[in-house]
Image 1: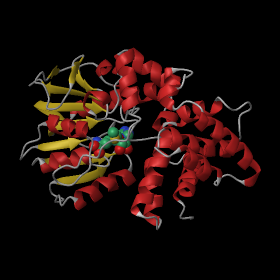
Image 2: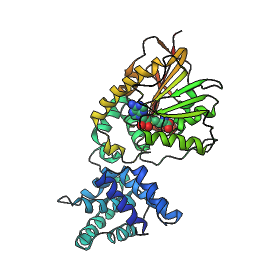
Image 3: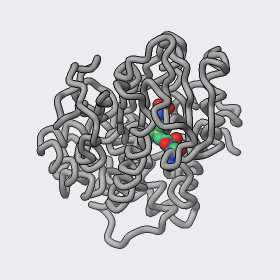
Image 4: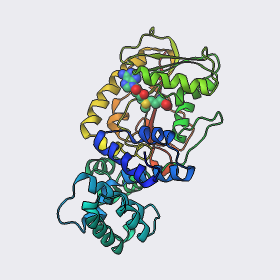
Amino acid sequence: MSDDPRRVALSLLRRIEDEGAFANLVVPSTLDRSDLSRSDRAMVTDLVYGTTRLRRACDALVDRHISSPPDAATRRILRLGAYQWGWGGVPAHAAVHETVSLAPRRVRGFVNAILRRTVEGPPPSELKWPSLASQLSVPNWIYDLYVDEVGAESAVASLARMNVPPAPVVRDDGYVQDRASTWVAAAVGAQTGELVLDLCAAPGGKATALASAGATVIAADLRTQRAGLIAENAHRLGIPNDRLSVIAADGTLPPFADGKFDAVLLDAPCSGLGALRRRPDARWRVEPRDVDVLSSLQQSLIDSATTLVKPGGRFVYSVCTINASESIDHGIPQGWEVDEVPPEGEWQRFGHGWRVLPHDADTDGMVLMRYRRLA
Ligand SMILES: C[S@@+](CC[C@H](N)C(=O)[O-])C[C@H]1O[C@@H](n2cnc3c(N)ncnc32)[C@H](O)[C@@H]1O
């Protein structure tokens, strides 16, 4: 592969857009194999993540100067140029010149003309955008869902915050995790001597935190390969096998006896609409019907998870999305009461649970629900 960071970025964008590659997998693995310098790696990451997050906004910026839509490869080059100038802090001349040099000869004149007109026009902060969804670079349905869930003002603030890369938060034990995820693990209240199940645990961020808190943890995940990531992370953090054991299992058919655990954490598979900044391509991948499918999977997981807790024990449910249909709409399980003690962290009350929006505390958007099994 070429060592030019813009060319590496363009080839990664092609894999993400045309082959459905996941940005947060393909970018680190490509960079690991490259001989790019540290600063070039940072540049590739910013170009790929930024252009992917702001795909719709980049298109709006150049589309004002285009009469008939370009082919996908040319569109990709225009996006990369628009991102560098509009959001990447690259001066106009360099953004145009360096991007044009990536274009095949047959479209070089076209790319040059469109990018020149783009940088001569208003910058993103002064543009008359076709819509707020276009400015915020999300599909209309995600914008509408946010407005319905949190109101227009918070929707704009949440979505804007998810266009800015997350600041890494490093736990005391060295694991890099979103701050709201650390609050979810803390909400389990795991104690030394307790047996705790994390039913959907990969890659193990919360399971390792529960083990570090002193509990004996069983960490399950549906996919064997992902379960392997939990074991890798536990090993890297020096957590002994007898403190955290890993198992590949379907959480809707858990291979454990009823009433076995002091606490069960269900950090459920979800649409991830609160964590769009962390997964730059997710907004273009998730579809409205996924929300319904995931919601019914979550209900099945809740039904099975709650049978596994001892009388008097705890059940904690979390999702990295902000919508009611994947959280509080699941209701209070029969035979359980809501734990009303406010959890650690900057949560706001949300029905019988707690929610944090991305702009509240610069974390992922999440919902947390905590229950106690009636004795
Ligand atoms: C939100 S992630 C968990 C993140 C994890 N708790 C952490 O903090 O690192 C949800 C996980 O659920 C897993 N999953 C999906 N369907 C499942 C099922 N039926 N049973 C168990 N795990 C499942 C996915 O493979 C994914 O790893």
